[in-house]
Length: 276
Image (cartoon, rainbow, N blue to C red; front, side, top):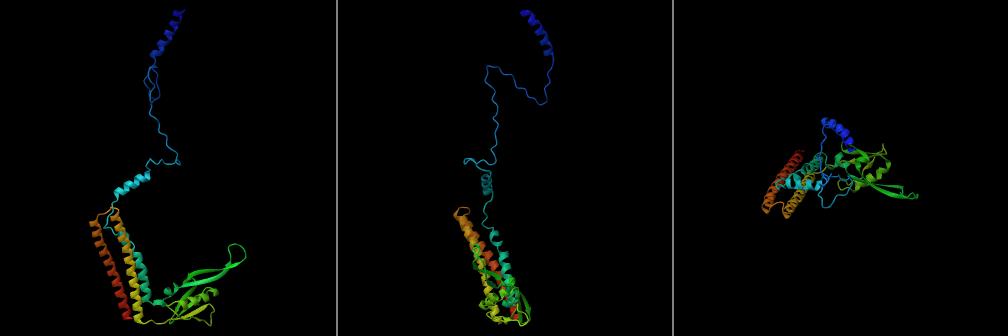
């Protein structure tokens, strides 16, 4: 019985041995391992954490790594005064504009008059919907409440609304630059007439010098802030004591150069007033 079974099985096995089994390209066959050996150990797959999962405290974040790298790469240059000098153009533009106003009409320049602060009080309903009314106080520059029109020796103030007339009158009377009572127009209820008063040349020159002195103080204040920053670098050990001394000397040169520019602008303004 056993011999009968072996014969057919042997015949079936021989064709299988002669055939070549073709597998798909890229298939990797692992060597056969006896049942008695230990199982194969595969590399453990790393599973990425969800995007909203909290960061472990002992695991450095990418931002901290980048910060440490940039901090090591960017060294402080105590002779780089860009943080200071970058503030100069804005300061200069403000005071040069004010200087031109003084040279072209002074306090009675329409643009200068338009900056006068006017306090407007109005009665409005309360926010609590109770039906009561409260007084609302708002400040506006004069140019938002009226149009300033030069007319030779006078300035016409064409007021936008009748309720602004009294606040404008009060603001002009209280201003030390004007200190006069605008007159009502006989032809237009919304027009106020302001008389232009000629200033003495000495008074205008004094105003120019007061303005340029304020300009210098702004520059000194900006320089003081940068000097304080340099001393903070020294305290933290970012720069040495000799580097701080050298930087302070160079910083003084930067300030001196800017002060010379302001002196020149003041001298030109005074000279222009002398020719008028």
